[in-house]
Length: 292
Image 1 (cartoon, rainbow, N blue to C red):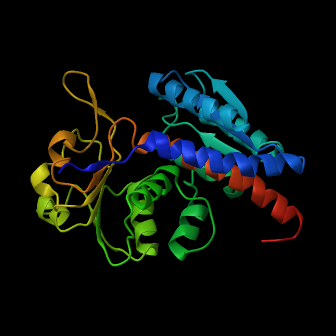
Image 2: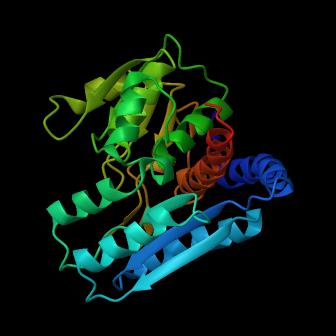
Image 3: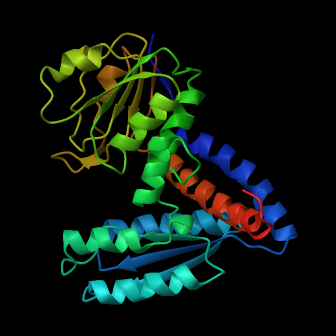
């Protein structure tokens, strides 16, 4: 029997319906959630991602403010826009679309991300929000991991007591994903490029999250029968075909549930972003009223 395919498009539609009720409640109080995206440079993939975010915001009734900057934008110019948006009360969430232009160094990029107001950090990348996640405190969680957790719930699996393996250790996906699974009482192993006998580690897992950016790396014989497999990868193979980090066709014969690429994690990442924007607006109202 084949794996249940976890439809991220359908689930994201459900999330948007839930958020629409909250957006209407905010508007009834005179507040329209606002998302500002800084798009610097001419990376084609970034332009596509931003269009998806703009459309999702418009469909939900969230005000979208997109700041478009050329390939010649330097760190100082991007910083000036971040400072302006930090101070703008109409903006509840700020997202700096990566990658930034080649003239912005890795150190400068890290400093720019850190300069975003943590209360507007709807990407969940700021050290303050990462620290809140580590401490189990309220904060913004990176959008892809939060979407993955919703997909795991959709599979009908409670992580408590389960063994989970996260392949990848980035601060964008791998580390926050592991922390969310740990909070849900799973026993978590983080695997990476230095892990010995990776296939054996993955084979132990009831839940597998693959987030390494290597096409079809996870094979069927790596997967425990009945496991939930969440494929975060977005790659192009030699033929130019879009594929994930999981050998989908083969793994589908073994896994209990599996996300497709495309149509799995991607839509849930945008749903996670919209959730954070709405939460940011709600928190602003609560803080203004002296509530926490």
